[in-house]
Length: 125
Image (cartoon, rainbow, N blue to C red; front, side, top):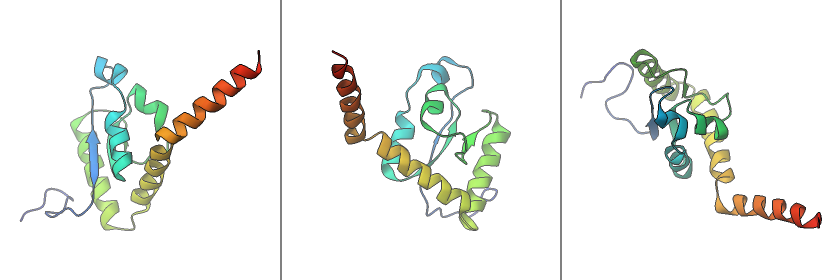
């Protein structure tokens, strides 16, 4: 098997991808479903910095793309592969962030947030 760039021929890690053209209707109005799915599966994700993503991902997430150019995407693929093959500092940082996102997007967490909100609202009457 041949490798492509720094990506090994046999990949033994899970990394999803969601890239949308910057300033397109998709990047402005689509949901974070791919991000939420990756988080639920315990995966990292290479993701464009869409409007919805900005609401969920912290700015220090290591695999957020600066733009949607081919060179930027390819560089990120190389970064992910090199980090995973090395000390996995960025990889583990990303997984930690994704775990937090999964918890914050869980039905239990969201229900708890609604409970707090409505309790405050009802206490004003």
